[in-house]
Structure formats: C-alpha cells, structure tokens
Length: 78
Image (cartoon, rainbow, N blue to C red; front, side, top):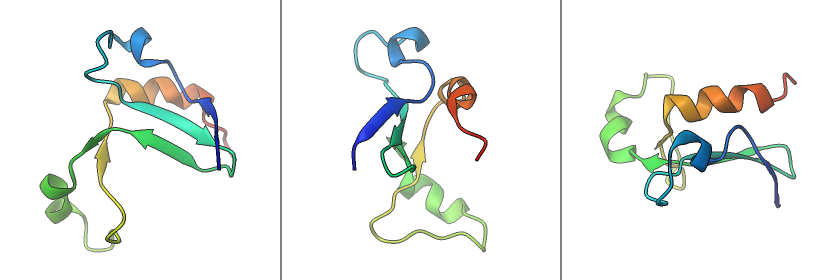
C-alpha cells in the first residue's frame, strides 16, 4: 500500500507553516484513505452512537472542518 496523492489543499495553504497543526487526507493505492489528525479517542469514545464502535487497533481522529471541506473536491463520487 502506498500514498497515491493528497486529497485537498496542503497544510501550508491552510495556514500551517510550522508543522505544529498539519491535518491531512491522502488517497491510498488500494482506494482507501489515510488521515493525519488529532487522536481524540479517549475524549470521544463515550460519545459514539450505540450502533458505532471501534476495534482496539482503531482510533477516533479529528481533522479540522477546513481540511475536510477543502478535500471534498478531490474525493471521488464512487
């Protein structure tokens, strides 16, 4: 599995110049997506709806609204 491309604007275009806040979205060679975000599993796990869950190897990751909105144009419809 490899990163094929960035989805959306790079962090510098979103105001991150020092590398301290760099949420990002990438498309992978297998068609899945990888996300760099803030691990908020501890804070949000109890907030999951009853029909949601996560495996031990999964994390709840938060990315900024701007990151996801700017990525939207690059996400394929199918």
